[in-house]
Image 1 (spheres, rainbow, N blue to C red):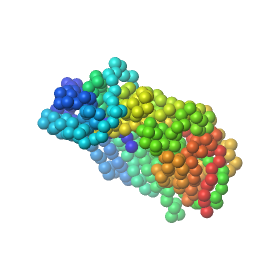
Image 2: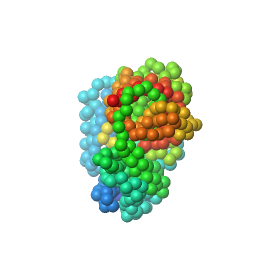
Image 3: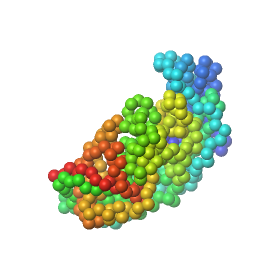
Image 4: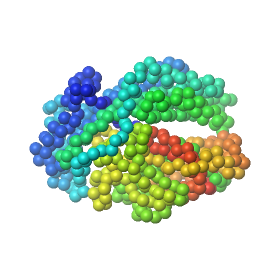
Length: 467
């Protein structure tokens, strides 16, 4: 899921979303913090978001959906006598804002004391991060519609067996984020992202198979609708006629998208929050070798060109590049301010906050498995008999504490170094730590899917359960 983003201020310092002028979010946040402090809060923090999102969906050359959604609000977090209270409002009138501060203070009375509640101190300078391209808003809606139509038209022209367009869509958003606290943090940034997505169905002799492709980034001109259409069509067509195969133990190569799904299970386990709650398979393993020496996993909130990059996190802490696993060795975890206080550590700038409606968790920014130096074709070419996995079903059921997983899979057989027969109706099972340890090849094709990225990965041997 994409983070909720917010709409920028106009030149006169006032928000103009929907044509309604209100005080700029920064001024409003400062007023809320001052009000909370004057009413007895020992620490307080206001977090404001204002967003505008456009979604266009096309099918059969016709616009099926065009939605422009706006979301604006502010939340206040207060600390008093070791207790935390939170409240938020999307009504930015003076009376509603004052009532929200009062509710946060009242809510604090009903929470338990915790000696680790903190707010970050003032930051003198934030890193320079490219998050905003004004050209996205300047592109006409008509051109954005044509882009979505071109994706579908390209997919259908690629192969006549592409019969159904489940979705051919374009999306963009502009946003503004504001954090003000009683420790001196007073920060805001604005940004924008855009992207497109295709999900198609190919049909032949009663067999239906799906394919998808997506591309998200910071610049409209970087979206290639023809590439998206061709890739989605090719993925659907290549799976036509897929059947199960006998059970076997063979080398397995994972497509970048499938690898990012696996990383989606690994990522939460690399947060200090999961470790402190006893919900991580990596607990107690810092400094140990927990993966193949080829494996390095990084979270980088400063990565150029990525839509999850930002100068600061949801608490106003500067984002950073954090190496979590380096050449197989576990180096550490991701922290926000609270979890860092519990471990006597420093926040890594991973206070994740997707909305003004909630308090910060620990989350990833641009989380990825570092690319290797081998071409994907070479990873496959070195296998006499194996499986190239293009899809897994049920990865979310993996156990984050033990690391055990058993999921449905689909892909293409590898025979004598070549992709041959499409496969469906098989299962793969294993353990995430074993999976990481058995990686014996990593491709040079690092590919990002929104906030997570991975290259092609080869496992030297896995059990495949078939017919």
